[in-house]
Every structure is written in C-alpha cells, then in structure tokens.
Image (cartoon, rainbow, N blue to C red; front, top):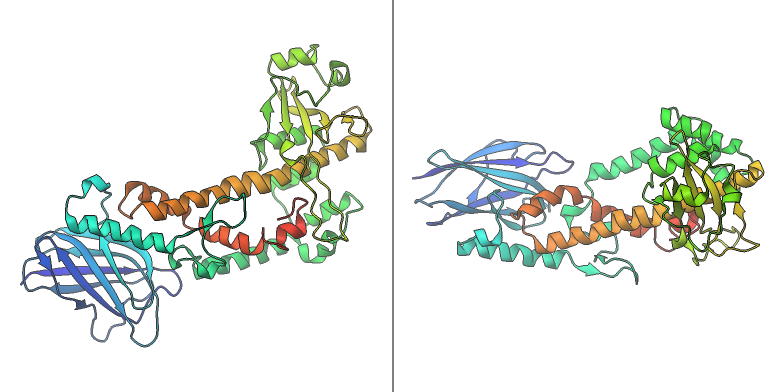
Length: 430
C-alpha cells in the first residue's frame, strides 16, 4: 500500500500549539484518502514551534496530490492552532509543500493546495477551480466593507480589534510589544515627570529641552540644539518626516504678494525674485489644505488654533534651503502680514513655529493617516476579497499588509474616534 510522509509545522508565536485532534486527508487526481488522525503515542503533538512527521498509508494509488484537507476536532476545550505549512513526501520521493500560515479556530476544516503560484487561467482541473472559488467566497464573507465615516475610504467591517478575522489580528506578543514599547518610550522621554507640561501652554523654550532630557542620539541632539535656525527649518522639509510638501516654485501664487524688495536681503545671487524663480532657486510649501478647517473644540477650556500658511524658501549659495517669507493664512491683508527673516527675532521664530505646527497636522492626518494607513487598508481588503492564496500578487503583497487592517482598527477605536487621542491632542481633532 502506498505510504506518504507528512510533515506538519506549527507556528512559533504565543499559543500557536494545540491539543486538539488533527485529521488529514489527501486528495489526488485518482482519488481521495480516508481521514487519518495525526498522532504519535506518548508524544505531545503540535507544540508551539514544533515540526512533526507522520507516516500516512493509503489503500490505493491517489495519483498526483492536488489538495490536502485538515480537520481539527475538540479534545478538551476549544484550542486554536496556527499551522505554518505541511510537506508531503510521495511514495516516489517527491516533496510537495502546502503553505497555510493561518489560524484554525474551533472545530474547523481547511483545504490547502500546493504553494506554486498560479493564475486562474493556469487551473484546468475542476477541483482546483472549485477550491479557488470557494476560498474567495469564504473570504468575502469574512472581509466585508464598511463606511466608517462619510468621506473616509472604506474600511473593514469591524467595530473593534477582536471582531477582525483571527488571521489579521495582532499576535499576542505583538500586543505585549506595544505596551512594552510605549512604557520604554515614556521612560526614555522621562515623560511621567513632565506630564503636567502637556496640560497647559509652555511658558519657556527651556521646557522643550526638559522633555528630551533622556534622549541622547545624534539626530535628536542636533535638532534640539539647532531647531531655531533657518537652515534646520529648511532642512526638515527635505529630510524630516514629511518631505512631500515642498515644491519648486514656478510662479508666485496670487495670494502671496511677496516682492523682490521684501526678500532682497535673503537673495545672494544679485538677482530679482522673479529671476531666482526662473533659475529654480525658489521653493514653496503651501498648507492650503488646512484653510477653512475649524480648530478642535473638544475641550472648551483649552483654546486651539490652526494656521494655513504659505512658506517661501530659497536655495542659497551654500546649497542650503532656508525660509525667506511666511504668510500664516491664505488671504493676504493687514491682519495677515508676511513675516521675513529681517523681522524681530521672536516674530520670525513664532512664524516658523506655526509653519512647523501646520506641517505636523498635514503629516499626521494626510501623509500618515490617510495616504499610509487608510488607503493601504482599501488595497488590503480588496486583496483578501479578490485574490486567492495561490495568486502570485497575493503572495507578494500579503506580508506587507499583515498588520495594516489591525492597526487601523485600533486607530478607529482609540485615536481618531470621538474623544480619542486626536481629539485630545491635535488642533484638527479626530
């Protein structure tokens, strides 16, 4: 009778092992085997991180192995199991790997096919076509669309993290990592001692230095020592966390009435402002996205403000980008002056602080939240709904969206929800 060697790999994450009964069936081109209990006498099967091998003998030839069926039946209580892969050694010595990399919950059954990437047009066998179709039907029931709020990209239909399909939830150790990393960050920043400083406006620039008393690395020290300088201000638009806002200025916008006379003390090439623009030495950062947005009023006792500035920058002879004009709102006028480096020291510094504040809000809400998280979730859900595990694009993408939906669900629970962290800390609110 033909004999197969089946090797089963259990995941190494916390609680990946199981004590449940595991049954395996082989589906071949010539027939299907009976269910075989994978069990070794006096041995604890399917422990976390284990790779276990079993001999499976069948009554007749099965032909080419196309699928394997895994059934999990309760031993004592419901015990989830994370199956990494199963390798089958055929009687003729060939090895076929069936990747899984997912949780089997409750008393479930899953059907796996080999790991070779296949397009739909490559499947000519009915049982494989049927498997592809059923996999997507199941996924489309699990990964449902939801409109979280009008105007937002569609998201997963889950109110909280525990409502997500188990395979895209954070692993237990990942959740612990979040807590430990948060605690470590609080310790490194020495935040607990100065937490009261975040409850009210700062009264001294020295408060900024106190926050970073425990930080000691080259970048943070450089920023702390030079953040008031124009060169550092310009440097951050190219090398900071949001380098997507700065653009070459091809023409001064109509709502920024800057003249050569206003900025001539900053221009080093003896050219007019228009000539500097033509030579590609003038850059602009425009935060018009923030124009018209009401500042957050979640806490009526704490007044918050939003600017929508336009900042003009100049590439000087040292090839450094420096600011040469700042207008804090979009509509020019007497109440919206243009600030210049020649103004009083703290007037100019405060104007730069408002620009940096606006950059923070655009980075957090647009560059980071919308373009990095929320848009990626749309592609992640579409991938799970439309691409079976054997599809080559699924194989390429799945590792990159492993935690995308989970972290976004956490964000909707805790960060951008009503009275969440964004409402408490950001002038834009949640």
